[in-house]
Image 1 (cartoon, helix red, strand yellow):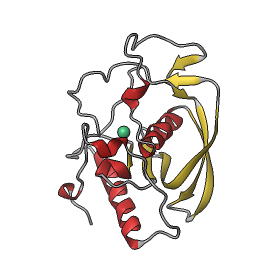
Image 2 (cartoon, protein in one colour):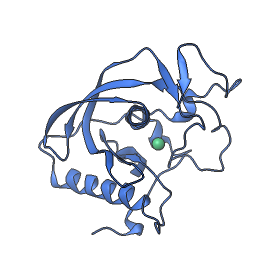
Image 3 (cartoon, helix red, strand yellow):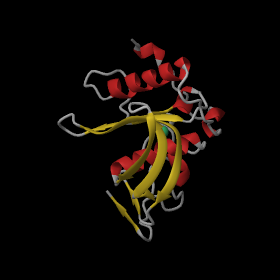
Length: 185
Ligand SMILES: [Zn+2]
């Protein structure tokens, strides 16, 4: 079992967040398995009413300062039914739509302090992505085809593995300007 104190997030300006992560061996080592269990504990607990964590729908290993190609996403609906729940290991983006979408209120990230400037604005991402990865729960390679909100979260986490952050996508001059072939959700 994990505790609140076991989760140590890194935030900007920590440079590790700008580095590329690396593939891990499959089958997973015990160390990597425990890392994923901690990610699951962290994100799942963060959506509980009495959590001490900042609410999150996903986390990437690099956000703990660990440069491994692993992220975990858990999205549930109002009834608590899972819309998406899996840890993706060694993910590869296979394809994406032309059309882009942004959350109408923009994005946030556990690795960017809520008080930092420059976080306001649309973050346009592909409305649909196809990603191949090794599934933590199914213990096999899977192709994930996701659209809408799960696609946004998937790209946010995938970006972390490339050393990118959501703020990189914000148009600094016109943060709330609508772009061609794009819409908000
Ligand atoms: Zn993030």
